[in-house]
Image (cartoon, rainbow, N blue to C red; front, side, top):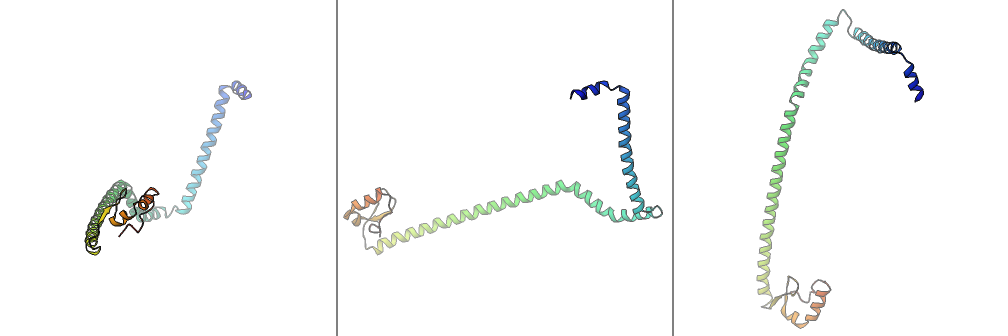
Length: 171
């Protein structure tokens, strides 16, 4: 690091200018070579005698595609905005239909629960021959009163053990 500082300190302004001129000439000759290769390629591709006519044909063929590409680039934000609008609209409609069908499904479930609950009450009254039912203590179910009164200790043992209600107590 120190040797680099010493070399830089010993350089004079004229020598730095000469080095910069040499490097800029190297860069300039590099770009001239690239331009020369490109012009040679163009001369091979489009010979000087037919160059104008060949370029006209290429322009005639390429013009519609270039115009279409430019229009597409200009209109792309609008097209994407319209697509986004339609996408969000259809997603909103889908969401509304989903919620509506879910609500209709729940509505029919409530109706069916009501019908089956009503039928169960009718059948219990008709088919059990007037046997008395009671709400089970600690649970939200109906059990036969006579079976509970016959053995309440068995019911409470099952209740404290978190076991399901025995079929002895159910209809």
